[in-house]
Length: 415
Ligand code: HSE
Image (cartoon, rainbow, N blue to C red; front, side, top):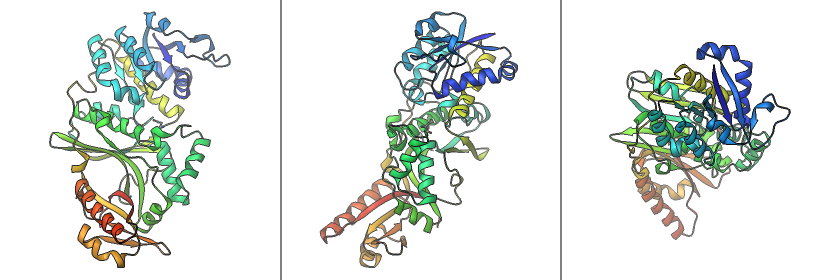
């Protein structure tokens, strides 16, 4: 029998308690021993819940109970999650977390403490919710060199972009709807500004390179500036806009970024819609593989937590070598990254054709009926080259008294 505790009885924590209860026998068979929930730590009381008799308010109860060998952290945020998790590992307890902010900010240190103490620090649920991607990387793809990971890693923003695409709705309308449905947080900044995706791609990149990745080194752009006009052009182009977190190896560096990207119907992530997540992995032997499923939500995320609990119980006496070490991974300057650009420009192509040719060279052009603007799709170029040419174009438009660029999106589109 292995005694466990859950810290944080919110959506995911209560999901974990539910699965432990409902799938008790299956879990015991998988783990090789029964996992018994002894405590649930929360500031609140839950008198009508099935764990009412196990609620504690004092972390010391869990920390000092030597019978508790496995602790689940589903509180979210860094404080007090970080000191609590660190104390549990130092006390020789295995820890399983769903908290990407914690893993992205303190994963290096927590993984090292787990190694030193001969216990495990698992975090499958921190990326892609219920999709088994972390374990896929450290087990199934262990013998592969992974060259690229690109993912739709945030369910809330994918839901918003899908609705904008299919219904022509505005960003604000759909965000409100997502909040009413409980997908988006009341303060949705972490989702819509790309911070959540940034932490997730940082964790995946560290898993792949074996080195620490500072998420603050990753260029991050959210979806708040995407408009219905972008989707009108996208439709015309047989494309859609998705918030992608991506990381590619380039020599000893990685090119990593989070940004809304125009992708075509032939892109494997095009069909990942609604609250679903999808993660595309390119590796040297297997080639392209893709992982798809529920990236958020109570039971899908709790399922990943329970899988980690089973693995910890299976390996009660040993540390499974996962994650990364203290060496820092160099992230390439975003200015050197290359892609095509989708650019919306005020006025008519006819009046600006010469200027466009002088700045961006040969481009594909798109015109929407009744619009006071047009769009171009550039050739592949570096960010710094794009910025230089865009500044010239804007400047010349301003000099002649007009408006210039209204929108620019990165595009992964073939001709
Ligand atoms: N806010 C996150 C999302 C939850 O929408 O994907 C899962 O990390």
